[in-house]
Length: 236
Picture (tube, rainbow, N blue to C red):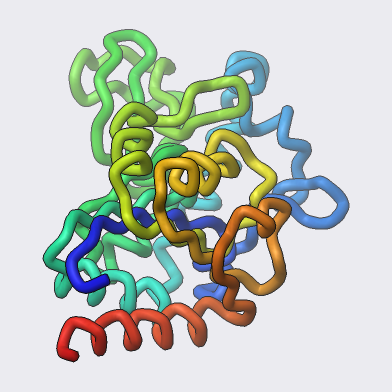
């Protein structure tokens, strides 16, 4: 496949190798907190200070780590590919952008963006947010939240993602558990529409049966190797 259309989905596994924790630990806690205490609209309404403190800490941690070889390899592939290319990430960090990726959807939002509930404006944000920051658009105080898709909310740009999945020739899932929907169903959509499917993961995901090919190992090893093979096919 020299110039087909590619859709790539990445999850927490690719950022874990840069030093960011995966979504939830084995005990079900997310960096020491119950999900319902920090990642739902109800949690923000109940205790905005706790939610802001949680995301301020995550924002600070994400800024302190660097993109790894897997992030950089995907950016290299995008730059060289002549067909349509879309990278969809479940991650809220900016490691893909910092590695050079350009055609990118953050389906679960971004740590470095805020959303004003008073006026609806979304905007770039750096550093701590806190519950008393004014909206840079309407100046209302106390209505700014992290622009993150919380449990019970709809992921971003689903129509664009669905269109890309139905038109792709290759779907690749990297560092995902296959347990969180709707992303876990992407492979089935792509496969049903005729795409070849590849999973790159430490271990088989919950949806591994839907993939035509599997590569198991660290993303920093497996992704650069796969990209090297893809780029070599362009020169063949």
